[in-house]
Image 1 (cartoon, rainbow, N blue to C red):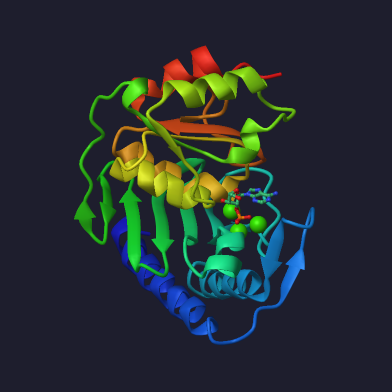
Image 2: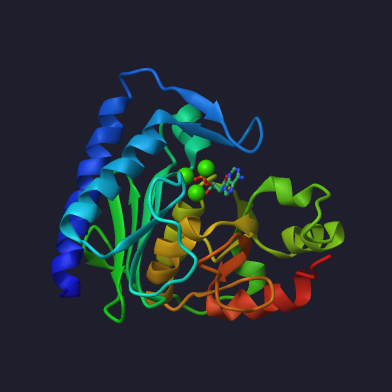
Length: 263
Ligand code: 2AM
Ligand code: CA
Ligand code: CA
Ligand code: CA
């Protein structure tokens, strides 16, 4: 199918999902814990994932859906058309703040990112990209990233990763934080990638992300020149959880080589 036809379809689907989420603000959420007491899921995460799956199965038979809440297909390869969906990225923010969360979606064909979307539901900002045709916010084209340096960079990093952890050496994260201009933590990997694409931050680092957290964002970020890899410098993993760094090309390899030494 023509990518531009799909793009129009997906934009309207995402906006419809956004309406459902905004309307849910007046009703009480059912909140459950997943892997631990702070890893949360609500009835809306599941409802929105189901909403997408029902539409995709009806209108795109043969396409597969890989969603965080597991209501879609079991995905062990990226053959054919695969939609990687996070119905609500930043569930903790969704619950506590009713803002700073996003719908994240990437459409891949045989493992190649074709269409990427991040919808900041509350602010009604839709970031999107079509492979090779640039990245956009609300259909206005984003400028390519410009050259910068580490001492002028703002880095997105969650404070958890500065406490002793099993992924990265404590002294490395402390040194990185000292050497950059500033750090931010938004609590939504998808939004951090959208902010990287708009130049509001210059790098985003996480020790553990899942395919649906980054699938849409890496397509968008790539269109403005950002580089996204795991901590070994390999392309981001779209089948399983992994380390992740996406950054302006002028600081990506410096952060990776001089600050990140995996334990
Ligand atoms: P989520 O809200 O969809 O779970 C900050 O918490 C970011 O890390 C969010 O994008 C969040 O996505 C993601 N994340 C990935 N794995 C997580 C986990 N086990 N617990 C909490 N957040 C997780
Ligand atoms: Ca989650
Ligand atoms: Ca997520
Ligand atoms: Ca989620």
